[in-house]
Image (tube, rainbow, N blue to C red; front, side, top):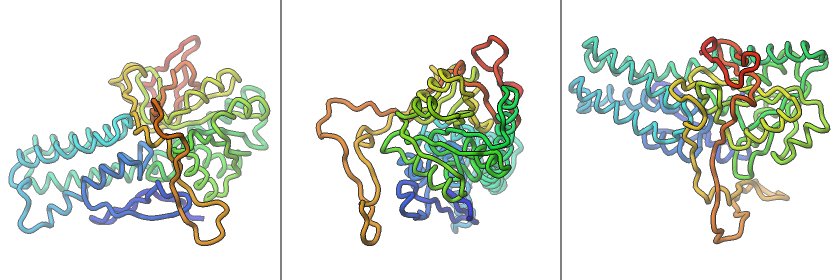
Length: 383
């Protein structure tokens, strides 16, 4: 079956699959403005740190492409100063859509550098705009290749680790993952789910397990859809059942993605990741983070400095799905699962897993492990 995709783009046409409606309804939304891109990211119509960065960058490319075609030309193309002020404002605006996902910041900084470098070289405004358009497209295009690299690094590291511990990998390994990190969360293939896909493609995966982190998060449902599409044997479990799973099943590793990795290896990821890491440590199960270099934020010393996005309280009270039993055409509904008038609702989108609970961090450049006796990582070899 064909892999799933989160973004379709050609020339100045840009579409995303509305992930709020998956897995029961596949609907592509056309993105026609920077405001629509911002809204799609903020409301989680698109999710996953790499996919967010790709959409933001592609929306800038779309905006500038249309500007170059416009007659008369927009004012921001009248001078380099005008263009810089205009693009800086756009990038700052897009960055506000989801602050925890560092890939978004990396993409906006990358575009800022192209802007500033071309202005310093005294390029005319149209040439600068063309350079920004090309860079925006490159942000998305480069994602698939690096995902395959990090997936292979992580997969091979795990197989070697199991062998070194006296394990037998001939029948494949069992891996647990949290949230969705596949093609719908990236521009293709995926990060942590990419590692699972790599193991499956090389006949080294026995079974994938994935957690239902919370009823209102789409992550597990999207993971289910991706694994089903790729025909990968898998089992969904509630996040409260992870400890039981570790007690009664042979799990060789937990593998997760990341929205931001601090300099010391502390990692922010979907809420529920920290729980899985604590339980993995208790059961001596390797805990692997798979993420692109752009996710590593060397300006953040440790996890305490990572901003944690707080989602609207109402989201914790709602569940979306189809009616069951479903005797006619699929009808998607949204229902409230809590009493009204609750005194308070704690609804962070992410938690931070300390480096001491992480066994390995894989990027497209390789795998980092902690030095003997160390509780934090030296990430310099893989960034």
